[in-house]
Length: 265
DNA sequence: GTCCAGGGGTATC
DNA sequence: GATACCCATGGA
Image (cartoon, rainbow, N blue to C red):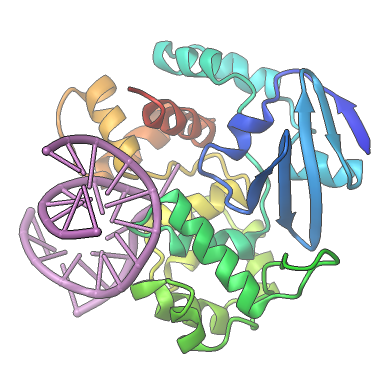
């Protein structure tokens, strides 16, 4: 087991805030399978313990970024400040772009347990088995190539979108997105069938760390209408509002708002 | 703007 | 256990 000590990090809030789906609870920690790694990780107070290499974990959980300055900016807003205090340590992850793209294509009009199920089934049907039997890596681009089998993963009307993305997306497509501006990368992603503004924003935020992204789902729509606008508004307007108002950390703000709103009641 | 495309989660009975 | 409604949506 390796370990690192750190402030302002919550493994639970980070994993369970709807940005990432490839984890399962395992005793007092989590089993994660992503980016050709399968490992166990747990947190005990400020100590993070895991059976994979340190640099991998730091990269995956954005532990090298200066979270303190981000936090100082976030807490200037009253509601965000409440969310940051309540769910302190929630960090944006740096996911594998391909896994993230397919996961969020699956997310369309769905829910978190079902997205997890879709991804686990796709991995089982198309991915390589890990050293531990019964667990599978997520298949690389090009491997998710049978429409019938994709349907058998309970993907429903999203099956054609996944099939299509698998045919079009390759390494050069994915690498290019990282080099483009937010706007240009978003346009590229939206060329894919089944990828609109919301899903493009999720991929740009959760895999590429583009902070201009402000994904708007029903929870974000509700919380912005209720706390900031005081009236109903279109998704498009809310996306533009959030992106502008919460710059330069619109993406981080969105994640705290989403987690906050969903855990109310 | 409206409607519809799997299907599992969730509340309510 | 039936039933209705909901959902990290986008396309027609």
